[in-house]
Image 1 (spheres, rainbow, N blue to C red):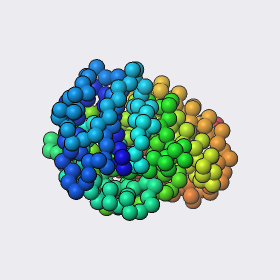
Image 2 (spheres, rainbow, N blue to C red; image 1 turned 90 degrees about the horizontal axis):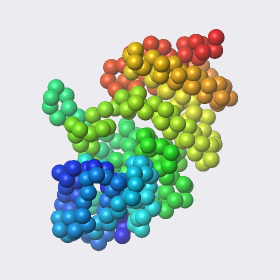
Image 3 (tube, one colour; image 1 turned 135 degrees about the horizontal axis):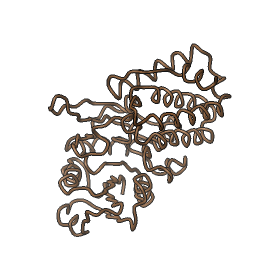
Length: 326
């Protein structure tokens, strides 16, 4: 098999799974002997029989794996990657779809004729505004995501790029953080993936920072795990990574996302934790002068606003550090 498309499912309704699988089966200009599908079920209550796949998708080579217990989304994806014997793998969420019937043909041609470790493509993200469905197209550089990315499996193995066992949230952020630490990949303007707006989706209608309010500790731990990866594989950039992400977390905590009375105790606890991390990594911060930090703070504020809409900040990096230093 040349390419395996991995679809993780967890209590996925049939209409959504059909949409994802239909988008694969309708592909033109490819041989389905070159493309396999791995559907991995993370111990769902909604069950599928193996013959359901065989009956409805006779053109597809589908390997259906069922976990005996819930091992988390990242570990489940990793289990499917480990099970793949294909040269390349890509991930497709069970409530998303490939963009068109011609999504895969140019990608397979490009991968087969070039030595490419990672191929990044365009992604279309759907969203609702004023009750109407809209969309915008994003490149990987605009929105670092697993979606529409094709990985050479050998490259992932050689560079120990894996989903982290200890993350149940921000597992995809960790994976992509390790991937981009190596800075190897080709960007193409092919639109291959549609991140669909689903009303009952846990994450699609919410941005990274809405999600981070609920999973703040895992977000910070994710960044710390990526920092450890940088220290091993990109020590020349480890300090920069730590400073960038800790400044982001401080600004996020000092933003209107946490301006709620019910979050007061959590905010205080998180603030002390972040200051302890800052103090632990003061050597990293000492490498960067104030003009650099000023630019970084402004960039991170713009990034938070870009992904979340209008955001106000009750403080910034300097006021936070001054407050907890005194």
